[in-house]
Image 1 (cartoon, helix red, strand yellow):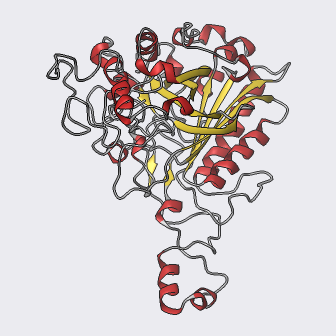
Image 2: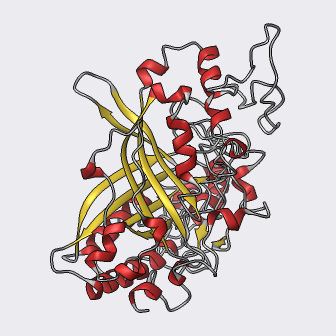
Length: 456
């Protein structure tokens, strides 16, 4: 969970832009890769990112922007009441940040980690087919575009996000394996969408796995994220029913003195070796090329989604030294046990005075490295979750693991197989739900997501 756990988006330092998560397939806790961290959150800026000065619809009267702060400093509470009631105050940078809906790739892949998120899978209703699916994706795309621009939903807006800006809202859509049979599009189903193999660490709940359609919602304001969730659910209408929903969170942007790799619920820096958009082979690893098959997946990606339970009560009984040996990195700084800083290349051959490897042979960070897995790389963009406690008082908490790759057979699968054979971290985590989804490329102006599949 330490190295490849968090995507470039993990750095959570700033404002609205699609940044690549700092996670890399190489060292990812929780069965994934890690991130490359010097400044993950700022290094990966997606084509879809766009700062926004104003909001097209919401009157932002209650927002404490720069103007509000100045008024408060000058005249205390009275300074606010003196402002004309019909004049909107400027949003803070957090609320004003905007992610573009239209683009080469869908938003939410290289977008910086969001502080609040929802994952939802739906199944088409009995009798619903390709026509109904196309109408649903058209509605969803329209709603996502409006909400991401800070506008109200076209129909029956709930006002949950009134007074707030877009807050970096990003909505992403994907297709599950079962979708193609339901819509008569079996011949268009990608080979890469074949079911994932079984892993010995799996304890999967089928009711919370897979699904015809998948939606990822992320924002840096919890009400903005919930508003989008409700709008997406309402748009589904009678065409689809919710199969499962999972809710997650990350550290808020600006919560640390400087941008840094995110921490997971085990307290580890998570995402140190995530691939970055600045790397020459980034697109090759993460996105389907124009020469890929099928054609409708050009510029798309494949998302592996896993609910990974962390056995926190057991983990927290370990000493910090024991935790560090399991991960292979310092808990405080994320630096490899072989020395240096978080970004220093790990020395896998270094030994101590007794001749023992400084980075244990079964350390999570060692096992997940691309050079230990035939170059396999994934872009991790997770959320943490805490869903209360079991009847025996054990916390139901962990990681909503989401990783992106051009082909899961060359990305997630070889890394997870390696972890399955001897990762020291496996004793402290449990994979409880799983899904694989084909996420097509971004919609062009005037298109809806998936249109090339559904109308091709």
